[in-house]
Image (tube, rainbow, N blue to C red; front, side):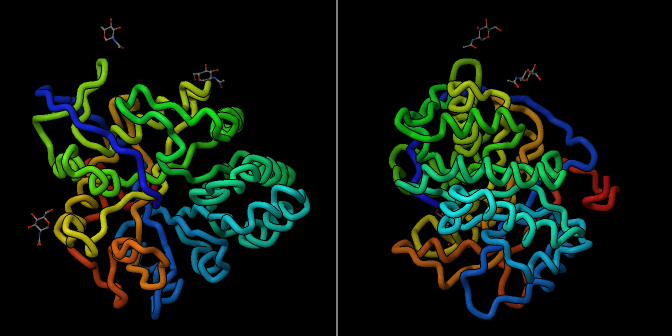
Length: 349
Ligand SMILES: *[C@@H]1O[C@H](CO)[C@@H](O)[C@H](O)[C@H]1NC(C)=O
Ligand SMILES: *[C@@H]1O[C@H](CO)[C@@H](O)[C@H](O)[C@H]1NC(C)=O
Ligand SMILES: *[C@@H]1O[C@H](CO)[C@@H](O)[C@H](O)[C@H]1NC(C)=O
C-alpha cells in the first residue's frame, strides 16, 4: 500500500449504461490474508471462515505451510507471494527457484495455486531482481509441467505509472523496469497484479477528489476520457494500468486487482461505514469491469483481519480487517456479488 498517484476529477453528466453478465464459474472476489497481528485464528479456522462466507480466492504474502496445508482439498484458489527479501536469491539462482517450487508447490498437490506474486510493491534496487526471479520460477514450473496452471507475476501500485490522468494517458515510468515486466507477462499470458487504493488517492487530495467518486457512490457525475466515462476512481485507476500496458506493447495482459480496500479507523475518512460501503460496492462492481475492459474483474479485498503489528506511520494501515478475531464480520457484508448466480453453489462451475 504505497502512496498512489492522484487522479483529478472533472465533473460531467453522462451515464454509462453498461450491463454485464458474469460467466458461470468465474472466480472474482478474493480476500487477502495478512497475518501481522496477535491472536489471529488458526489457518484452518480462516479457511473455514472463507468457505462459510463464499470467498473463493485467497492471497497470502509468503508460502506459509500451515495455510497451504489448511487449503489442501478446499475449493479456494490461492495466490502465494514470494516475500521481497527472498526475490534476490531466486533471481540469482535457478536452483533456488526450483527448490521453492518443490517445497511450496509440488509438496502441496491438493492446493489450487493460481498466481505466484514475485515481490509486493518492490521499490529501489530490488526491482532489478523481479524479472529474473519471475523467469526462474517460470522455468521451474515448466520443468514440473505446471506452466499452464500457475502464472507468475508481481504486485505493483500505481506508483509504477508516471502519468495517471486521464486514464488513457497511463504510461510506465520511462526509467522503470515495468516495460520489460509487462512485455514478459504478455509472452507468458500472466496477468499484472495491481494494488489499487482509491482511499489513499482520495486522502492525498481531498480537495480535488469527491469522496463519493472514491466510494463508488456517484451515479450521475463522472469523468469523461475520450469515449470512456468514469463513475468511480477505482475504474480510472485500473484503466490507467491498462493504458500503461498498451503503451508498453503489452495490451493483452489482464490486470488482476491484488489488493483493494478502505480502512475503518485511523483518519477522518476512515470509518466502518465508509469501509463497508467501499467493500460492498467493490464486490458488487467486479462483475461489470471497467470502461476499457468490460467483463469480470478478478479482485482481492485487503484484508481478512486488522493487523496490529503492521509497521507504518499511518494508523490506517492497521485497520483493514473485514473480520474480527472471533471470526464475526467487522460489519455486515455479502461476498457474493448480486450479479452472480445464487442458485449455483459458490465456487462450483
Ligand atoms: C470515439 O468514438 C467514435 C465513434 O465510434 C470514433 O470515431 C472515435 O475515434 C472515438 N474516439 C476515441 C478517442 O476513441
Ligand atoms: C493479443 O491478442 C490477440 C487477440 O486474442 C491476438 O490475436 C494476438 O496475437 C495477441 N498478441 C500477442 C503478442 O500475444
Ligand atoms: C464516516 O465518515 C464520513 C465522512 O467521510 C461521515 O460523513 C460519516 O458520518 C462517518 N460515519 C460514521 C458512522 O462515523
